[in-house]
Length: 441
Image (cartoon, rainbow, N blue to C red; front, side, top):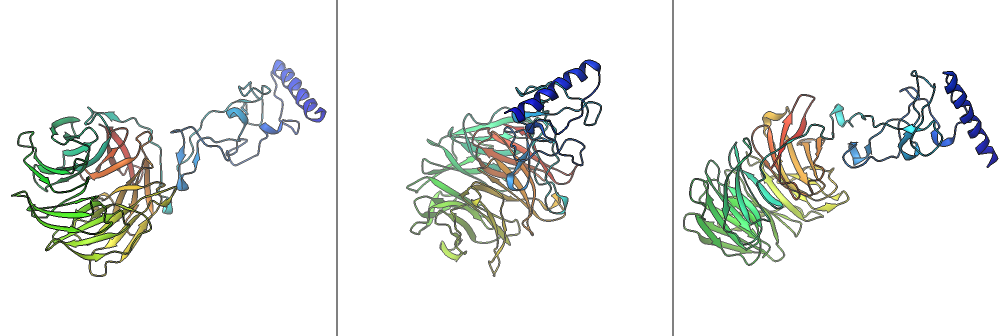
């Protein structure tokens, strides 16, 4: 006790005398251990180690490790404050210890960089606009109807057509009795379909009345997959009841039915220019169905986790599937070849919870092909499609699980969330490839 207290008391007395004389007292070996300094390239202030910031204050990089402060770690967020730019005088602090410990200000840490100096993640600094909300509860799904309008659905049982460029609701459609789970739009049309937990599928027309144009009833459980044929004449639906149904859109009649044990459908996507429908399942498999007779044409290698979602490239040559998971186990997206080899091409690993959605991004956005994924970990990531490198990560803190992702136009993404509605994101190139939240509704 004597060895520790006496040097501390003497240094305290020396500092008071020096302050009264207008001089400074250099730090010496008598300085207490909790305020020890280590000389670094930044002068007398070294990097912090092992301290995590409060939520939303830090910059997270690869491996999701956070660093919010620069300077040595000092209890109660305290640091030495040097006068005159050297190891000079010290000022009174607020850490409850002797007066040479002062509150440590938060200084910005440099963004973490990925391969080739690409910024992998940056915390949003600019505030975003708040548009009129589309829904009054959690949003389950969002899809782009055209370059100005999106269609969304959620727990409020309502389908909403929204102009995301002006921030206004265009039309609300009511008719389902339970949560909306899936939406599929007819390309180059004002018509779209919605699936629900009420086990039905409804067809709507933005240019028509708010009442359903057509209804499709045939599943015994929640509808979890919708896919429209390239010529818009057929609709394929899937459910947790292990069945796929093929419908004639014009008549509303079911023309084909297929059922496989344990095939709990999670998503469907029609392959452009082909008679094939891609399907993901809770049985961890990805199946390719031939709509001519609704037979399985190919089964991709079984994954280790539930496959939650699938997307197909515009040329129909490649597809992506998404995996469930937790703590980084699983939580990946996988790129597959849809042509004759149908091999796995690449995996994208970096999310820490279930990957709920994925999209192929327009080629005009970057010099290389890129994709985007959204996850229950509140993050949207952009990836190099060919190498699997993560190019950028945007963290939408406070949004809850991200449930759906859609391409709005050549530079915009729409991301549905559990807690904060729909996020409008924009891809920018001012400081390299970046993703920024510009509005929420």
